Image (cartoon, rainbow, N blue to C red; front, side, top):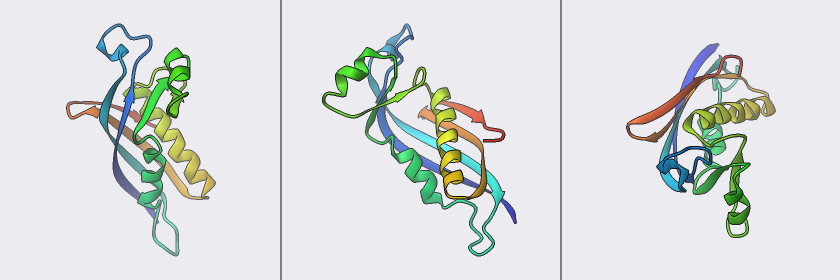
Length: 137
């Protein structure tokens, strides 16, 4: 059976945009909201495409973390006191949406699930989000 699911996950984390000229160049935090749409072949026995907790667990690895560009010199300084999640490029909503799509895809592959990520939307505030359609993810 082909089906579609949706999951919303929220987490708190800080980031900064190293190469941005504006106030987002300063370390600051957000209450992030991530929306994930998936589709594929549900398991014949359980009828489940992907356990919603699988999606939550992948995204929750970012909860209460500091997210920085791997080139950011601040990352090395902060790592002496607190773990830092580094990203290839700036940790923008756009890039985080793509990163989450890939992480969820990889976890589904690892679990042998017949599911694909269709869309990921990342809200960094109640009025601002970025979205990626992740064909073939």
